Image 1 (cartoon, helix red, strand yellow):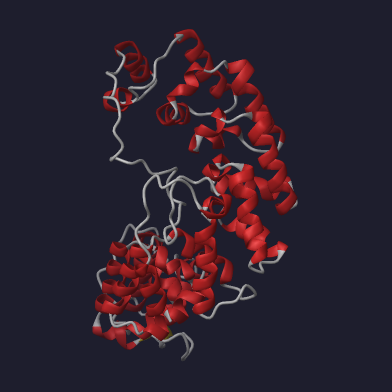
Image 2 (cartoon, rainbow, N blue to C red; image 1 turned 180 degrees about the horizontal axis):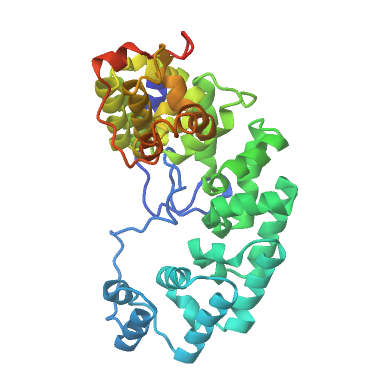
Length: 407
């Protein structure tokens, strides 16, 4: 099934840049049938003839550098002209007044320096007050300051009201928007409404639509033809809209370009993962296909070569591919290795169970229980003692399966 989805994705022509808008009334400028439009604000054609870029304004560059931008970043804002330094200073002061740190003010200026030309009290303050009235910390806008350039009455208020109607509460609206602020940039009538209607047409219940927006509101940015494809692909993979993993799988399917999907499937197969195991792992933990290829390689090499796990054991617990080696897996292995060398663990134990247990359970069972007798166990858990691998005796105490004798 995965192979057939890959073949269908490869059979569709590459997206044509600036091809005039998505299907079904979507005004997204990129026709991206197999390619999600989640990870960027847009695509720009290098083939379109344009006037030569203007030279950077020295006074503007100087001011932007004084705001904390690097000379290169300031010079890159060649289309911006700071017309009134006092107004620009007032904009920055206003952001600080609403809780922006200096780093966040700099980030805001770097991403959207045009805001420095806006009237701070007439244009920007009402938008900050609007978000504050909804319970937002306005500084969240530092992650996507372009929102401050959108009309309050004609865009922001209608979009928030629309989202509240689906999500049910301001708390849920805050959660969804703060996770993917850039989704609030898309047009209500040309993107948001059509996307939600498409979810309904394909059988997604209202409760599931709300949960999908909480998972990743960026799905509202996906062209309608791509939404239809994602539903078709997941149906072919054996997932229905009632399955627990469907929403997360849908989000992943919409996030991956078709060539990335094919490449990642090939990567897993190169490590000996059969299609059935990969499909089962995807249904259990869809986000394994969002893990970078370098990270997948690094984790497989560690699990297979260092921990001596079997590929089937890893794929049976796909959460292992989402864990950070440096912050989670290696410190835990260092703790277990230390305790086994000190004779604190003498019975056979399940390695994967220990690695996948939550931090509180692991620390109570293996760290604080022995901290007095083996003080270094705390340092190992904090990553201050590096894992050097298990010795032969230690491997004898480890079961690589989730089931087995208790430790």
